[in-house]
Amino acid sequence: MIEEKMVGRKRLPEELLQREQQQSLDRIFFTQELERKKWALAIHDGIIQSLGNIYYRLQAYRRLLTKNPREAQQDLDKIEELVVEAIAECRGIMDDLRPSVLDDIGLIPAVGKYLNRIKKEDNCQVTFKVKGAIPRLSSETETALYRIIREALLNVRKHAKATKVRVTISSQSNRLAAEIVDNGCGFDMEAVDAEGDNWGLIGMRERAEIVGASLQIKATQGQGTSVHIDVPASS
Image (tube, rainbow, N blue to C red; front, side, top):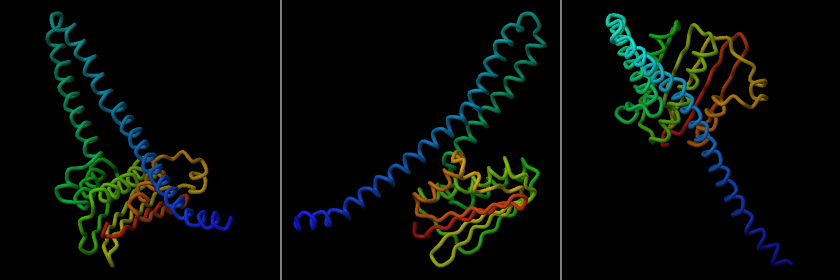
């Protein structure tokens, strides 16, 4: 009996390690599934709808070509516009999946590029500050950080009704930190967490955990939201 107990005690740390490894794998698979659903929706709502519009315009163009060439030409012009829009949709999704600037230059230009889009497309004052020398991180960590920042900014664009947003990325004492602060309407964190179906927030937390980053989200109704990410610079 004593031998069995001792064996059991020796096996316990190994069993715990295996359980933790399995939980880590489960979190990775869960995050990947969220990503698949997200991109499937993006393709369905963007590219497939654009291609559908192009198809129906082509059908209309064929019908008008012999009956009313002038009106057919107008349809052809519209088809050309739709093709240009579809190409832009494809490029946007490719940028969202893995921006080439992450590989070519790094995290800062990629974030800056997206913030420039916000400046052009939204009525929002954007401030971007970089403090300290920002090191290159592993591909996995840079991608995770970029997507967390993008998701936070997407929430600002879609829900916050903010007029100002500030993004700060800093490096100090072997840590890299990113902060996104807006002056929008905020939300009730406890209520959102209780619902359990906010895939954007869940995805942010899971990505942070996978790369060993800490993530803090603070929101107050009527007073805005702040998101803070902190990761070892050696990642």
